[in-house]
Image 1 (spheres, rainbow, N blue to C red):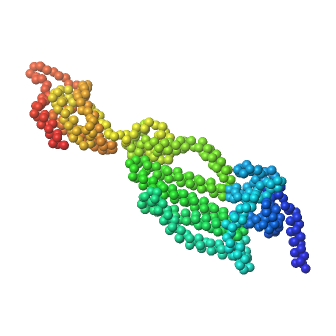
Image 2: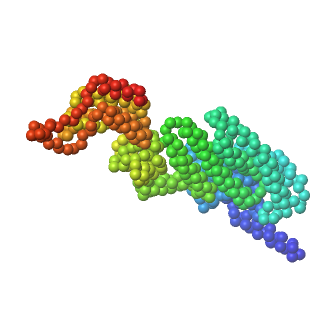
Image 3: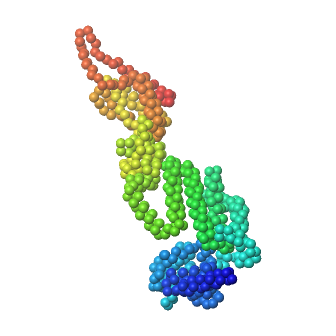
Length: 533
């Protein structure tokens, strides 16, 4: 008797509750609430829920309403009624369709939307026509048959999940593990073949990077497979919402990993290309470019993760733009240096290892970083020049010279006879012509003029060795040969001095340097230069 009384009490309460909630099609909020409320287990009335379907009647309308809710549950799509408009004249200006319309899930399922027909709001004809197609895609033919043949014990629930659904999840995981080992070899083979078709480079580092790239690609394929098969288990909306959120987070993480590994593969290929070029600046660009691309990948992945937790993408992009502007204003020097870095890599005013003069800094370029360039001076001092300043400086790149010019004046004694001066000049010319480290097409050795305490011989020569150390060695060899020539001819080098000449003093002879200007001896010395080379 008590059980019967309790049954009638609960039945009466449910009727009263249903009577309190009436079919409301006056606005988008009322239509959606009517549809979902009358398909709940506590207030199940599919005939009332079918009133939200336009263009269909009776059992067909009920079937569409039920399947539409099932699709929403399978996708884990929950309606936030606080955001659904209650304006009966509402019009969504963000969509291209004309008239009064409202999209429930514009980013996840744009196919589902409401439209105002006469004075009421209904699910659109397009939505109703696509429901059956979407349902058949999400739920294969065996889903309903499977639920019918499962014994009653299989429908028992644990944490809102039936026992047969646990078994289905386990089978899905086992199949995914099997597919993982099969797809891993196939995907690696495809990636390797694609790499050889695009750029034929065989390298162990690239091959290792492709192997690391294979794993996340396969996992992405498996996530898509699981996401596609999950609706066939007909899980509760809360469970679906949790699992789909977890899968979507993993998909984003895997995509971040894929793009990071893809950056490593591209940078490995670029590094191999840079090694084949003469410029060392290309080698320096690889780590800078890698860090920049990695930053973009991580930043984009974090923005995508924010959207998964309900943050509006437009808000995220707008916030990122505003934040980027604020960050740019707060770090103008960093932005300037970054732009300067780009200009250096584009214009290439110097290469790694070049000897440059930039303002007061003179030295060898060692590294070009994201913010600054490192220059090592001759005394091994390190200079860090901000790239924003370096890109605006007048840079004298001595490393790009075709030859190293060396100019000096050789001062010989005033009392040197003209015959020896001429022989000395001819001898130096011959030394330069025979010296392999000098450019023989263009040089100057001339009697330039009369200095204060010497006769000046101009020496202008070009060394073919561009390295600074090699240049000093070439100078040493040239200087030693000139000294030997001067010593052989008897030519003396002058130095700042004052000579008091006193002649015709009683019992004194005049000062005489006693130069040997014998033509035969001079010619023998000049001829010997060829032999000594």
